Image (cartoon, rainbow, N blue to C red; front, side, top):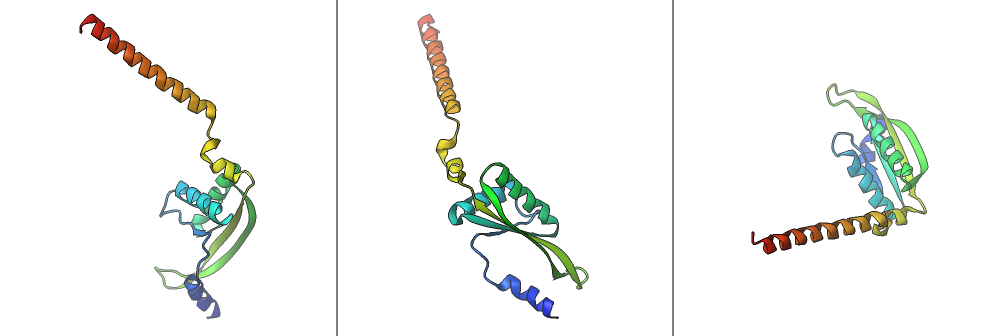
Amino acid sequence: MASAEVVVVTPLSPTKKNRIQVSNTKKPLFFYVNLAKRYIQQHNEVELSALGMAITTVVTIAEILKNNGFACQKTVCTSSIGMKDENKGRMIQKAKIEIVLEKTEKFDSLMSPKSKNKDDSNKNDDNDNIKTTTIRDTLEEKTEDGK
């Protein structure tokens, strides 16, 4: 009975401001990736947590953030919790994971708009000028021809 009381009390306890409880059915993967980036930016770390089938989604989110240099892994905690099965009304064990990621040194430079490749932006500017020139030339030719 004591474990059932703990399960009931836990969801009512105040949640951390930097915790994301991930579901693999409610939101797309990159919603959580972008939300985690925002939490890291605000709090210097984020706690990702999930139950059952959503654990793979949390691991994927953590790997995306780590592999792209936004975060490094601080802690990983696994456990199982007792929950009531909605269909059968009995207690079942669910796997739970909590991954805490912290901000990397290069996080701010990766998040800044200046981190975009300058060569690419210059190429786009050149392409815009070329297109504009081509359209002008075409219009001038048409007006000279009287069309």
